[in-house]
Image (tube, rainbow, N blue to C red):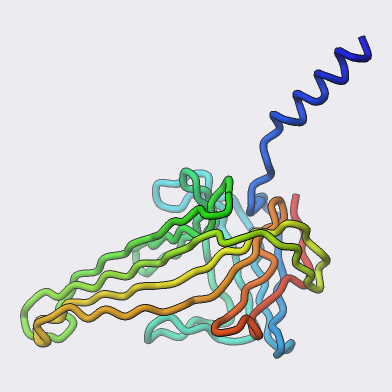
Length: 219
């Protein structure tokens, strides 16, 4: 009997799925503090379970910060609204662009492994140069898991956190120019501890600046 129980317990442990990289439940929150400038901070709080477009299992997130963000030419206020959800194999962040347009970005693999990569591609067609001809802009957000390492932040030490590298590629066709213009940029690195979520964001070129998890509460 003891041998049977031991074998049964071992089987259950082997079959137990790993925790989600970003735990989603109403009441969860994450507070990040900037470094080396510790006066900067932002906090993401899940306030409701609320559908986002065709995704019924999404969670509404209120993000508050110590500074105003910048999105293209529009200044965000100190408080913004996002949606967190899993879209197939990926943790995804959704944004509502008034009045009715939605945008969603894949941020991380649900069941990650070193070497995994993914991308989100957004295409916009509009007469950008006002010459009566429709132009095209393509924005690609890329992510790749590049390793695992222990990460120590004010909220604690997280063993075996996944490190991912993120870049963008912008391509645009402007009729008045008559050719494609392509630019690439490095967004930075993100560290994810399964069952906790993002614990650190670092900026190029050398990761000496960014944000790190100061406190959190997850269910």
